[in-house]
Image (cartoon, rainbow, N blue to C red; front, top):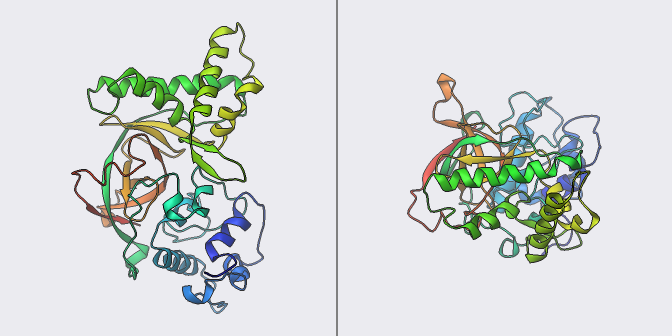
Length: 328
């Protein structure tokens, strides 16, 4: 086992939450190669003979995926890049990159991670690059998004009760569909407190774990305080545990799928987007069909999601067929 950090770990440490700039865009990568223990294995070397950055970022992302046999790097891909022709699944490692709810968990060994949506499956190695940056993957289609809620923001703590009520409303809509997802009041109550925090809590030293009974108690105390006060000005200090757990879901919004799955997804989420679990992924992702005539049957990556009821590989062990999915 090599001591030190991989290139992906270094990129995360430097750019996630840090306003660090490079004079040349390619130095976002080249400036870290000398510190990365896996640089030689990835086959990435400084090359300033071209001014195109997209091919470099594409090559780095593909090399990391092939080396790690997982899709962890997808957690850092963001929309709105200013780099032309960059595939949706390739991170641009921009300054002040926002973290996502599962990124801390990625520092843990696969077997110790909080989630295993694909049952800790690993991808085949040697994935060939596709045309136009297309990545062809295998996985299970979960469902299509039917309804969405508002984007989570805790800048005004007075909105917290509304945010919690929104989740309850979606779970009740799900139950009304008559599916087997929320079959009891107890299951609905559990989903209400787990979904809004992505079912994660901090266990110290920036390590995340699945939410426990202490977080559940914090949630119920929060509700009781809200229902018992004449004027809501914000949560009491005693429910800090739950409110802090909500923080990592900032910028995400709740959703309901056609079959009744409820979860949290990226702000860009819209009805018609598709939730999938892909081989090599710890968490589900949401993708959007590309409707342009030349790209029918292809999808753009929107981001990772929390989807209540499938985070432990339940669908991968079921009778859902595996499909080939092209991500452009």
